[in-house]
Length: 171
Image 1 (cartoon, helix red, strand yellow):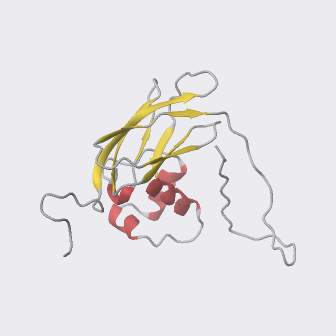
Image 2 (spheres, helix red, strand yellow):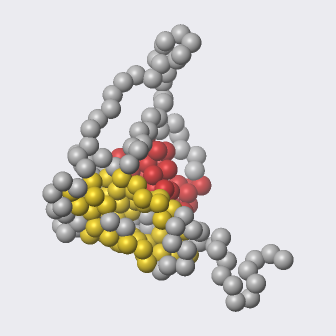
Image 3 (cartoon, rainbow, N blue to C red):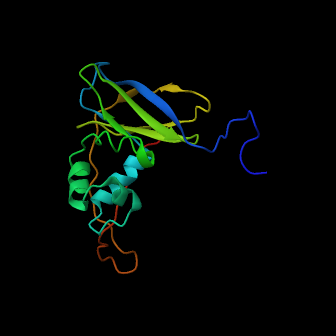
């Protein structure tokens, strides 16, 4: 039998959840205004926007944005237009002067919420709140550092082009 039994909730179907919270400086406890809070799908969109290859993505075609408009929106870290918020799992918000944010996401169960701010290390927090209508996620960001280097081919030591490198903390 396919689908949920009458009276049971289909846990695989996306449902809206309001995610809200605050972003603060881990050292001072003060609010961080202008931080960007976003979902896994938005992170994937950022990766695509930073890739120099032509974007062949159904979500972009359905959004009505041109590839150039999409790349500009992503490169500037702007909040998605209201018409795109929550679609395709992508959602983001900027914090206000008190460090507060709120966004609506539609997820089947687990989603990772990211937060980044200029000069701070990005943080991520997995959500796994089945059945909740709202979820509070607070972030404390630490001042960041930079990573630099060159990706080389192990066989000949030559540089490898068009590589995306992600650093993940053990925290």
